[in-house]
Length: 107
Length: 117
Image (cartoon, rainbow over all chains, first blue to last red):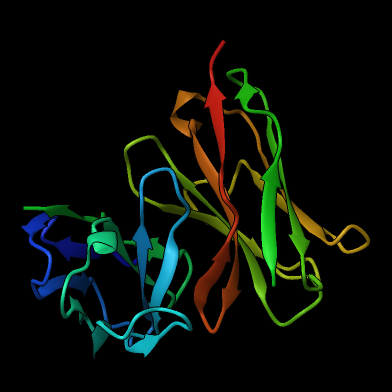
């Protein structure tokens, strides 16, 4: 199985801050990397697919980059609704696997 | 728009079988998409259970493969999950989702399944 490791596991930030979350794969996954946002009691929501493509309807302050084993999700200017848990997921090979999550909290 | 809705018992006894259905509305299940099951134990992360294509082709997580069966009912536009020999470790929110361009772009709201006697 491909292991996905996110860092940090938790992060405190303020509205307007720029934040970056990192995801590392245990082997190369090309650009088969997706990012999800999950709020308490809700299903995950797709933000970024194929490492850098913005899902329809997702604000442009979310950007994804990377390829191979190292990927990042950047939120350029945090908004109140962005405080949530973020997961990366590889869609390169089954079993598809997720990172452990990064909880973004208000400072 | 496409919507997915999980349904099934919220309580299952240990050693019993968990059975869930995901109803697809707003689109036919007979598309080029794979249909997915993911679960999330309380307070924990996401685990991919497996996927099914409308033809009946499946891929399962090896960690669950011996206990999982997925099926498709094209006449009802839905797909299903069965997980046998459940234990308390199978207590989780179970989500169904659609796979599009590799990613899971549409999700059901999730259904909580608790295993206890």
